[in-house]
Amino acid sequence: MANVAVIGAQWGDEGKGKVVDWLASRAEIVVRFQGGHNAGHTLVVGDKTYKLSLLPSGIVRGKLGVIGNGVVLDPDALLGEIAKVREQGLEVGPHNLRIADTVPLILPLHPALDQARERARGGDKIGTTGRGIGPAYEDKVGRRAIRLCDLAEPETLSAKLDELLLHHNALLTGLGAPLFDKAPLLDKLLALAPLLLPYAEPVWERLDAARKEGRRILFEGAQAVMLDVDHGTYPYVTSSNTVAGNAAAGSGVGPDAIGLVLGIAKAYATRVGSGPFPSELHDAIGERLGERGREFGTVTGRKRRCGWFDAAMVRQAVKLGGVQGLVLTKLDVLDGLEELKICVGYRVDGQEMNRLPPGMKAQAAAEPIYEVMEGWAGSTMGARSYAELPAQAVKYVRRIEELVEAPVMMLSTSPDRDDTIALRDPFAG
Ligand code: IMP
Image 1 (spheres, helix red, strand yellow):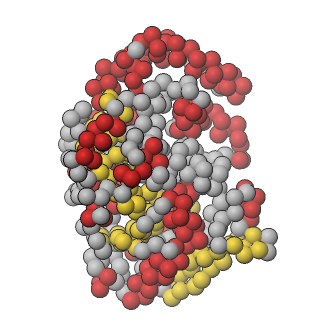
Image 2 (tube, protein in one colour):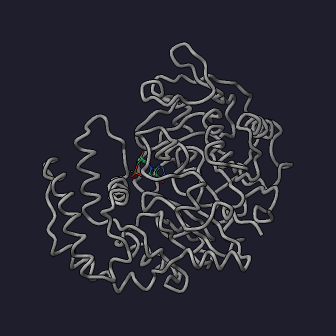
Image 3 (cartoon, helix red, strand yellow):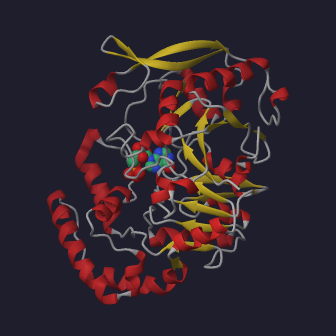
């Protein structure tokens, strides 16, 4: 039995929540392997809407949720989210949520640094979610992070806090931001220990055993390839590797465990935060996409920038992310548009190219080269088979497949989980 990994193929917010939920209902274990509570997945199940940031989506479907070592975990955010979904009637506890004992923790000093740095950048902001994601990953790589397992060792915790504060308070001093004292942080972590440690375990062992038993594992990516710290539009990226390869390192399994890689892409494009966006629209069509697509960030409520589908970029994401099949979402948002454009490449300083250049200046200067297609008059909303789609909509999907060099394996035609056209069971191998 194959496993499946799902990643974003644009700049995030591709509608992963619904797709992951659909897949989770067919999986037995759902694993988050990177990112943190900067992610936002909205799941609509019957008359209930769940907004998850940190919890693996499978929790909603009664599946085992695993938070891998590649995630950065904010304990307050986790406990808050657990309390919220419990209020909505879900059961969450150590029986259905396991967390890697090596996961690095986000402490209050991380969002403080994230926000102080963004303020200091002035007009050159990255546009982060302000949740401390970047600083937490920096501490992990800098070998200063407090990890979940440290909560079981009060002396280790105390010594590590000294080192962490030395580093952070020096930075915060330079930025003119308030400093942190050790005692309240230590008290807070010691108080969190009994709440969090029951969830902690070497999840790699559980995943290894699950593989041997042939259980279906879904690896749930957050953010997207163009926000990948290595491959995205650097420095306007998040601080983790969002490509499917990181599902292995971020959860402690081998690369052969990842299985089929699905990339999710909207039938148009959106981005929150700063950074290059060659096919961005600053006109009435962009506004219309934003309104019809309800393009407001799940986490920060920020209005998303909207534009035409960028096939050159998605093609790049397909190659970088190891995407074998595409899931196309929100096709219905394009219903009724007379004309559609697809970005097929860029013009940079008079030179044509079919991929984004790496340099900041060149990326900012990249002008889209468009292919124009006729739109469709009918509705694609709620379609559950290709036969129900207007012929021109099918043509649009087929053209995207050609341009991005990956087959469309699933189409999502409304927020409802059942309004999905699936061409095959991704877990079938
Ligand atoms: P950070 O991950 O908070 O450091 O933010 C870095 C960049 O990634 C910013 O442009 C954010 O808007 C973007 N970002 C982070 N998480 C998401 C997400 O889940 N969806 C879309 N954009 C995101």
